[in-house]
Image 1 (tube, one colour):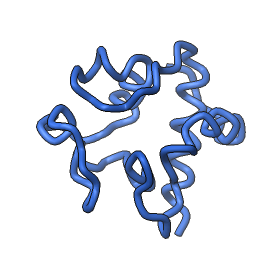
Image 2 (cartoon, helix red, strand yellow):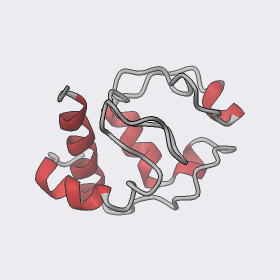
Image 3 (tube, one colour):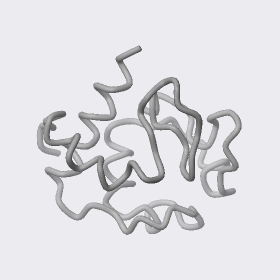
Image 4 (tube, rainbow, N blue to C red):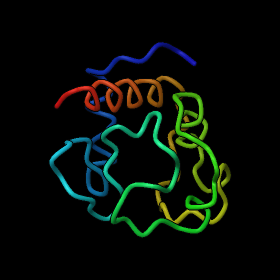
Length: 107
């Protein structure tokens, strides 16, 4: 996986922001809030109705897992409700993950 650039990741995240937020003070919208997702157990954010696929995933989100998931969510976790097809470009995935990680460290 290439090294991510959080500044470029802001631009990539624009594709995600209609469903997700990385701000700690925002509640879930159509998709779960991604603030602090790295290290969080999949399917466990309070007050979000996850699919059974995510509730039963049994893993914590890591950079590597997010990278694979974001490439093709429905193939990685069949049964997820996320309609986004994925990011084929490895650099774009690395950039958006770097942005999510950096935004998660802000309070």
